[in-house]
Length: 318
Image (cartoon, rainbow, N blue to C red; front, top):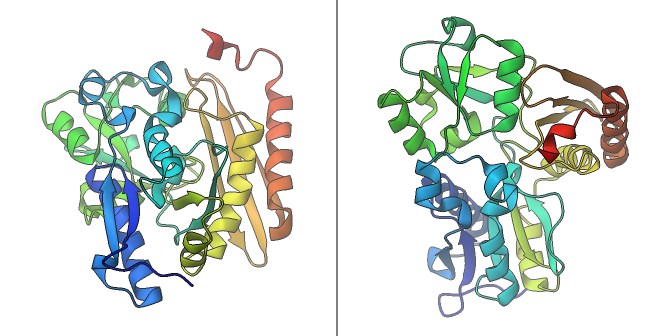
């Protein structure tokens, strides 16, 4: 196996947010420990993506208006294809279901807490929010789920990293917001959450809590390095979830939730699709052998689409 050295380090591409850097550092740490390498055998390369544009964040523009999930990956994947970096570290919930030609995602780190975090300065849970309270979120899924469960609340756009969103709460832009427990845990900021929301109450985004590491398809050295830190159970769960998402043509324009967990030797997959205004939610589940994960995800997607019927997604063309 060809290993990186201080003179020829492995270049790890990442966004520059505190959470993205924490994920890149975790990847580096696992590679160091698994292969007995020193820190100087790696170089962290920060790449600014379209999704990191400060003016767009401050304007709280919805992701669907400015490019969807690819906002957080396009420039990083271009750097990977050009050879500027050797591997790219991603939050899997931000990843489109298809990779550009020449790239592959086949390494996942052990999955963190999948739950959404309820964050507020004044209230402990969604149920505690008074009628008409203002809640901020940029996630179409979270907004649709909240509108479905609490149609009395007022929803506003709310973008930015953890620190930016907390600042907006302090400025009174909203009374509450949501973050991912996984991100808070990785930042050592779990205390920020007033409560963690059970999947039964708010099914999380597909692949939430998972870190994926992308590489060039023809890079055997990177493949060998990454295969040693790949977490098989996480890969199995994401196989079902991302097949479900792909069959629904999921994007930031579609409120879709999905979660697969191991149940003995089998997988239990739950999925949900919603209208953006929360007026309708359709959910289902599958239990399957691990080897049938992708097929189960596709089958569940077909079932929900059949229940939704013609016109359910017409709003996406608006």
